[in-house]
Every structure is written in C-alpha cells, then in structure tokens.
Image 1: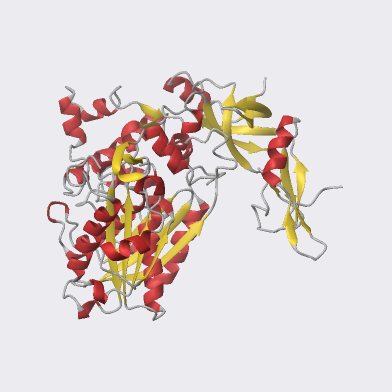
Image 2: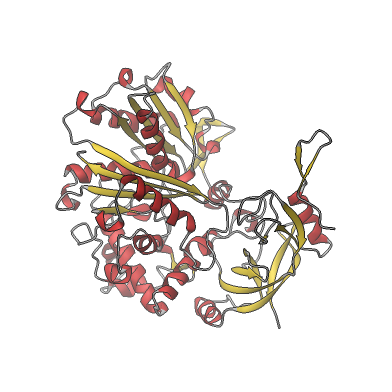
Length: 147
Length: 401
C-alpha cells in the first residue's frame, strides 16, 4: 500500500514524513523515491511535501523508474564550491519517464571541448538511466547515457 | 570594497550614500519618511542581520517603520511593489527602499572593519544557497549551464538558429551592454568591447569575441555574457505626495507582480520560465498595458541570454534575433533595452542592482541621461528582475502620471 507523505497525529494535527531523508536513504538502497498525486495524477520529483503540479497535499511516496531522456547538457569552467575538488563533470537536463524534469551530473557524454559539447547536444535527446553515485561525499542520483 | 569610492566603508555607510542621494533627489528628509525597507542577501559579508534597526540611526530614521526584506537579486524591484502597497493602503505617505551588497570581501573574525578578499567560488557558494540546497545544490547544481548554456540552446532552437548565428546574437547583446556601460558614470567597467579587442591586437571585434580571450564559461555561453560581481547600494523614494517635495517629474508605479518557483525553473521550452510569463501577464493587467505599449524595457541579465529571451517573452520585441543583430535595442534604436549597461557592464551587487535599474528608468523619463538619453524620453517603462532562485518581479512605470 502506498504511504502518504502527510499523516495525522491522534489529535488530528498534520505531520509530514521525513521526505528528503527517505530520498537520500533510498538511493543507498538503489531505490529512487518521488511522489504521486491523488488529485491530479501527476508525479513529482524529487519528493517534497506537496504536489509540484497542482499543490495538493494528497500525495504518496512513489518509486520512480529511474529512466528518462537527456534533453541538453554542458559543463562549466567554474563549478560550485561544493564540487571544487571534483573532476570536471557534465551537467544536464533530464525528463524522467514519469514526466518531471531534473538536473544533475550526466555520465557517458563528451564534454572534453566546446566542439564536443555542441556535437553531443546535436545528438540529443537520448535515453538515460539513473544510478546512485557518491559525489562530493554524498550519494546522489546521476544519469548515464544508455548503451 | 576595492573600488576607490567604496574602499574602507562599512555596509551601513554604502547604504547611507545611496539613501542620502535618493532623499536629496526627492527633496525629502528623514522626518518626511514614514517607513523604510532594507534588502541584503549576503549577511555573512555585510555582517548585519538586523538591517533596519541598525540602519535607522545611520539614516536618521529612528522610530520609523522599518524591516529587512529579501528576494535576492530582484529585491529593489520587489521593494517598489511593497512600498506602493503600503502607500496605497494609506499606512504611510512616504517610503524609502534601500538595497546593499558586498560581494568582494568578507569580515575577518566577524569584524566588519577587518576584511579580506572573498574567494569567487565561496561567493557563489553563499549565493547558490538561494537555490534549493536540499536537492539541486547536492545534485551538482551549475548556474552557468542551468541559467546560461541551456537557455541559450533553447533560444537557438526556438528561432532555428545555427550555433554560430546564436553566438553572433550574443556578441551584439554584449557589445551593446559594454557600450552602454561606457556611457554610465556609476558603472564598474567603462571599456567597450572595441577597446578590449584593440588592447589585445584585434581589428575585428567579432573575431576577438570568438577568440580564446573570451572562452566558453559553459558552451555556448561565453565569459563576457556573464555578470560582473561588484559591491554597491541603491535607494528609491516612493511617495503619494511628490508635489509636496519637488517639481521634478514624478514616476508612477502603474502595475507590478511577483512570482516564485523553485528549481528547475523551466521544462519543455528551456529558458522560457512560467514565472516570467505569469509576472508579466499580471503586471501588465494591473497597469492595463501590453508589451507593445512599452517605450523602454529593462530585463534581468546576469546571463545576457535573458535579454533576447525576455525581450520576446514580454511582448516588447516581435523579432528578438533581428532586434539584436541590427542593434535596435541601443539607446537610440527603435526598441531600447537595458541601457544601463546591464549586470556585466555596470556590475552586479546582488540586492542593490534592481534599485540602480529603477534609478536609471527615472533618469531616462526625466531626460537626464545625457550621452545615452533615449529620445523621445520614454513614457512607459517596464523593469523585470530575477531573484535566486527563482523569484520574478515585474514593475510597470509611467512618467508624469
């Protein structure tokens, strides 16, 4: 049975579940959590405490397929402070099979030069698969181009 | 705070510089001001967290109604709407809106008077907190790609442009920004793109634009299409009785709107943000205008791709590609836009910048801009700003109403 994101105390006071913790704990067990809305029937990703399509609180945790389509990517000369000690990486925009868009690290694309990034983007969209990976000391969801 | 005009000053002092200039321009004193609102994002560099109470004494506004407010880089624009609402509600007659930011240095041992240079990556760490830190920032958040590169690819796709053509559009956007900044006394940078090319031995400015001197910050966005971080402050006076104080041309706030949405900011149509569409739509409805009624448009250009993107989305430019390729957005063109010099040329001091853009709109409407005066003086102007990430503020202003 699907678990709701918001429950009630015995006194009828709403209490939200630890949604972000569930997401990051889930990645360590190869499970990708999003939510599904009982009002508009849309998925939201990553999980929050209201539907990102219609704002409803009547949402449940939903396991996502981890499949999607890479729409665009590039790579910056000045990575965020958190990633300053990481190797340069590609960052891109993925549309999940369930509908939501998500931006994260992309693997399996060529970002070795501006020309390579241009050529790579000309070949998009391509199918990608999500996988948990430790980046900058945290297990996050990255997407990899499907072979 | 390395700029000679600001060196050695505190946050309170740069805010007082801006506030006193605005008060003198409007011919109001501290006694005339009923309420004041102070914007500041980087509290670890200003070393201030109770901005209004601290500034009350520095600005001569003791016992006046004040508070700190924050919508990041749209703050000054948002402040216009807050001030307008307070005045229209009858609570106050005259309000001061102030914004200040220090991006170049930080206190040593939390002592504002002892400062050291702020590492640019740390500046962006402090700034990126304005985006979703629970998910986006952990997932390799990259502003250059999300706010520059992918919106640029999206614009090229919508207009069926080859990427070489897109690069040339961005060249013209940047060339105009730097030319306008060269005519702006308060700008951080006064060299034109032609000056930069000449200094590096290029006769052809476009060739310089495409050279290794202007690398891709994140392909297809080049370094000179991105903002320049600076320190600064700005201030505006909003009143319902301008004729009580001055015979200068008043500027009416005809309409405004704010929208908010977390990351990601766009989906099917990269660069076109639903929060921008809704804010323009509702601000125009409040003012009873359309994009085609506007004489001058300023849009947020931390990444200059948002000049053509929002010029089109706002209904101001019918064909943004032609408008920029023909430089119709120059101050003396058919469709003047971002004549300030934008956030690359003038520089960007986070919560101070929008107030500076309002300052320039007022000066343009009054005919006080000298070398870069729009002619005839604009009667209807629209100011758009983004605040990390992503807040949109749109204000419609009318001269002399």
